[in-house]
Image 1: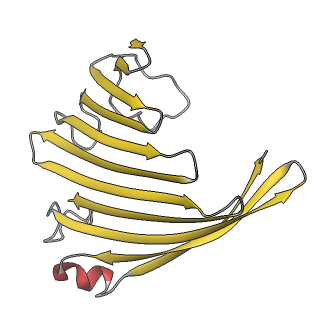
Image 2: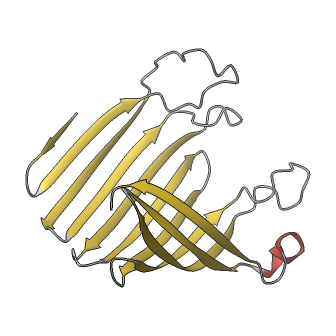
Length: 198
């Protein structure tokens, strides 16, 4: 359910927060034990600011009796001339358990109708890097950062548009993770996307 006008939008929902069981072809019992609310403010055509909160009842089957309270906040900007950006924050409070937080910043710049540059920064607290319960680092929280830069070239192909591009990423992490992830991990992505329209 929700309400919206030109300046503000408010939404609320109730849902089943638990993950499905291993029998993927049946329909889960609709227990609406979880809920969420979100408010979005659009003070101008260029800006959108949102915040949301949710309480999720036992989302993980491997952690029965553990609920989660999740909070997000973000600010989005787009000037209508090819520049867009977003800054976001999230927190996952496990009950019982600690709160894990994350930050995200990203931007996209359309240089012209064919060429785009994009960048992204992520900073995440994660305690699931060592899933083996016998590992001494199992359930230990580490804060990891990722820096990503990329380029995309859009090519008209009849009624379609083909985008070709790639990105490179560098990671920053505690030295305690070197044995498992290397001292200077990095990665790259190559992609092709075909879409209808220009």
